Amino acid sequence: MCDVTSQQDNSLSTLKRNMKDFSMLAGKVNSIAKIDGRRLVFRKSAVSRMDQDEINLLLADKMKAASKIDIYDDIRKLIRLTQESYNLLTQSYTDKKSTHFFITLAALNLVSAPPDFRDPLLENCTYPDEAWHDLRDLIFEGHFFGDTVPGKKGNFIEKYYPKAMVLFKALKKLTHGVKEDIHENALENFVKYYEEFMSPRRKDESLGIAVHYLQDLTAPHHVGNYPAVPYVDHFFFEKYANQIVWEGPHPFTIDMGRYNAFKNALGVRPADPERFAAAIYERSKEFVPYIETSLHRETAGTKEYLRKVDGAIDEYNDRFCNGNDQWTDAIREAIPLAVYASACLFETVLQS
Image (cartoon, rainbow, N blue to C red; front, side, top):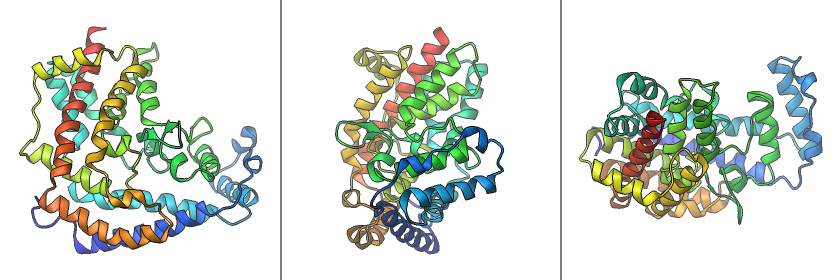
């Protein structure tokens, strides 16, 4: 599966070290006994007159007052480790186009989209993952949607940081903008950007961004709410999928007959974007068991997570190098779903 090796030894060592550091920080964040959300209130008018250094000091003071410990630097480092680990794992295939690009191109070909429609989509379908863009959020939370606490769905932050969510909320609003929502998720973001594209305030890039989030709703780790940090199999699986879609052999078939069968069975169209996205999510949930591992049962910050993570990284690296039947099964199911969902979206827009 690999040309030489999936990751250089030093990259794997760095990843292991990062996961241990992350686990320590996550454990500290989750050990906070009580957080007083009232201490995190701020006046928008006052913040608007501050520069970023002043905002950072304000955040540090408010987080300390709310949690009774100095936690600001630890949360910042937790976020930095997430971004650095993502960059570390993706830098080895930056010469290849992303899986989102493959899916978008296949969907455009399926509906015979004209060049003036295709080009903006191919340019913007990877936009939310770009390192320079704040659509990566704090820790990519807006790219996920799945079960959180019993009876609720959303991104993974509420699942893994239930008490500290108010700290992340304050940090996001004061660093990314007061309108930013810590609860944002892939389903809501798909609906938001699709409706933005279809509205009078239409932006050319909005449909490409919308289809990115729609495709996230077909990815097993994204609907399982297994973020790549601390569940690093997410990284290796996405690299494995990327290699399969661009280099083959393909374990899946994409054709017009199967696409028409998909539309007939789905029973809802993107013109009702929330119901459409929910229907795609319900289908993709079926693929989550293919990617679940024993590490998913552990929580960062616990002794069991620390005991398992090094061996798990070696196992995932071996899967990437030598192939894995369960991962291949997940790709066999998820890629056609992503292509057909994207094609249905494009067909709806072209016919509107």
